[in-house]
Length: 54
Image 1 (cartoon, rainbow, N blue to C red):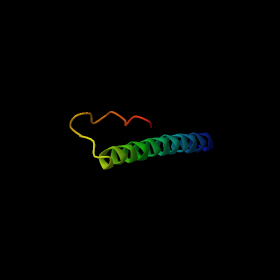
Image 2 (cartoon, helix red, strand yellow; image 1 turned 90 degrees about the vertical axis):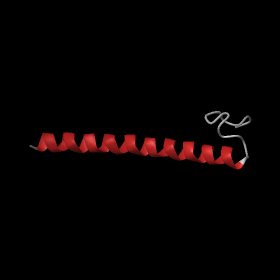
Image 3 (cartoon, one colour; image 1 turned 180 degrees about the vertical axis):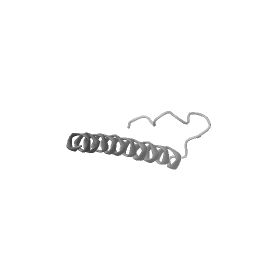
């Protein structure tokens, strides 16, 4: 019983670390998209291309 509780804690900790990494990546992508749109570039032309110099 004790061992299974420890394994469950480890799994939860791993899931939390994965979730935090994904949230950081999502924030970075959203901030990059907002920076691209704020520069007035055509969104339909190259939506996934990062601006040069970044």
